[in-house]
Amino acid sequence: MPPAVGRNAAPKTFTVDDGPWPGTDVRVGAPAHVRYALVFARAVEAERADRGGPSVRALARALGVPHNTLGRALSGDVVPDLVTVAAVEAALGRRLLPAPAARPDGP
Image (cartoon, rainbow, N blue to C red):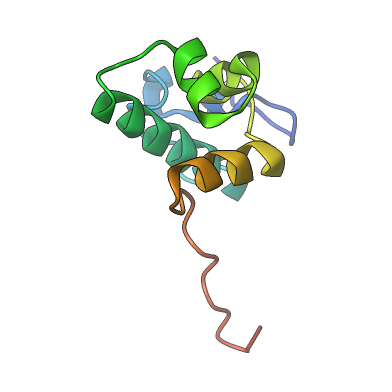
């Protein structure tokens, strides 16, 4: 498969050797938003496992987000939007995404 390009490419198209999302790493040089999408999907899948593996629909209901939005983010079809990330973080009471790295020349 040719490398995905552009901001609208599905995050899962940036995986190493077309591995399964989110269980693989992304290619070197993948856009930063793809890495954030991977971190989000892994964190939510870990939460899902901690809850005994509920369906995406049941987890989405418990977290207060649309199931289709959560499902598409977990499958690597889309980068989760800030509304979804904020809602999931608020429902879980913790950060899912890392804080941005501090710039060496200041904020």
